[in-house]
Image (cartoon, rainbow, N blue to C red):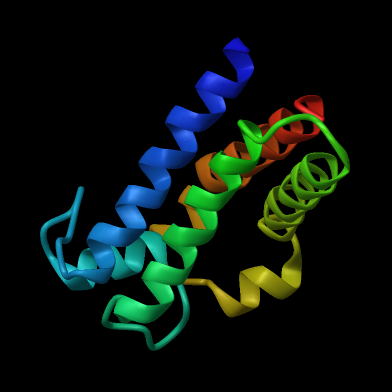
Length: 131
């Protein structure tokens, strides 16, 4: 129960950030270019992704939280396994040369290795433990 609450809070905060970015609220960095360099990291990206991509990520994250509170059964098990796997894959890719070539922009590259990747690994493990 405690794990589900902690996972819910963290994932809801991340989902809410994506929704805010989708509506043009640049938080926690008020300058769009700086925020893009911190959270997107792709070469040539100078603007945040649009409303639709940000909303899709936000809604997917909110749905992941809903799965934590779904009644026990096969659907819940499969969804939590899927969410845990997606987070784990996102964590793993942060340390691959392929991803580093795609997202070399600083400070994203450093933040990804130090914080985003490990956070995704912790979330993935949390969802797997919640099975």
